[in-house]
Length: 222
Image 1 (cartoon, helix red, strand yellow):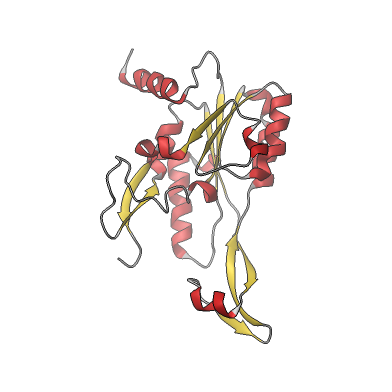
Image 2 (cartoon, rainbow, N blue to C red; image 1 turned 90 degrees about the vertical axis):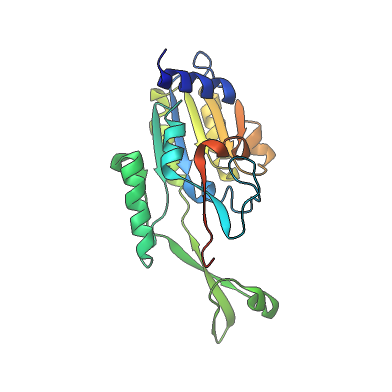
């Protein structure tokens, strides 16, 4: 057994997804959800208190390397903000890391959210105002439909479906996969709704894998 095979065996045993029970795995990354997994963490990937001015974030290369230890295919979904030059660079980095044919994106939409006077005073986003009052624009870009359609299209090609998300909107899709006799693995951060949890064969908390996928970086403005 070479080093790579040993790593694959170790990860599968650690996660509780042995190949004899969870064959042919495809992983779907809902990165808008994944990107927030460690934003409030006080400890780094090794369990050490984060230094002042540092935060923990998901690293694309580490994430890809981790998933490829047990996945036959990995697909990445995330929005692009045309107004933000850094967004295009990030999409380019994702395509380099996962492969251009495995990264799926579309433009972020901005949704108006009206604010009370108290909310406006506490807002961290740029507050605007017009005759109707104060408001902010919240970026929004869901890939529920795209991930669902791709999953259904690929149902006959895989036995195990791994979803990196915690969005309860995926519950109907997961119930559909269960009815097709598929195994379901969910990697999530925080709590999940009961409707989603009942469909799972294996549930993995992001906190238990952050040593494999996270890195420390400087906080913006620090």
